[in-house]
Length: 230
Image (tube, rainbow, N blue to C red; front, top):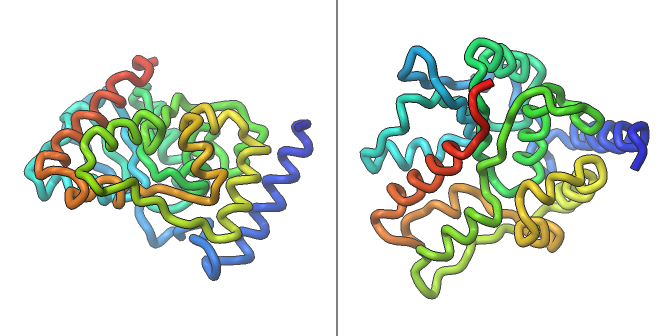
């Protein structure tokens, strides 16, 4: 698809998404009243780790688990507005540390990842501006979860709303590399109109009591493999 066509398609969908305003699908923007939360425990973090929801952070805290002190942790729900994209870019410029994005397997979080990487909500025709690595739900994460699932538990897939299905189809046109980012199994699941969220994929009821610790180790390893400081 030509650059002009990608830009137009994404702009058309964003207008439709904004007009829906959360009536049939998650709203496109969380609003300025939702803060970008930040945790830092080191004068010079070596990784910036962005969580699209706080569910994992809460579960790890409740289990008495600590995140690496070398992480600068950011958390905010929703598609990032320009002010928050600017703030993340400023943090990166100060630290020159790789950014890792932990999100759900759904069009909203994938769009947030793409916007963060491009530094712009209109990411369809933008080159990556920041070194952002997707470490959210993906084929390796699914494989990890299956190794620890208790039978007869299965992966808790959710049904997409019609506008969400359209969102995924548009992403496939304007950002086709996102399929490689998540892997073929995850891409096929989204093609079938299904999503997976971190909350459902991390509940210990489907695993064992030690699963929070195992999942933290998995995420730490994925973050560690992100590119070196620039």
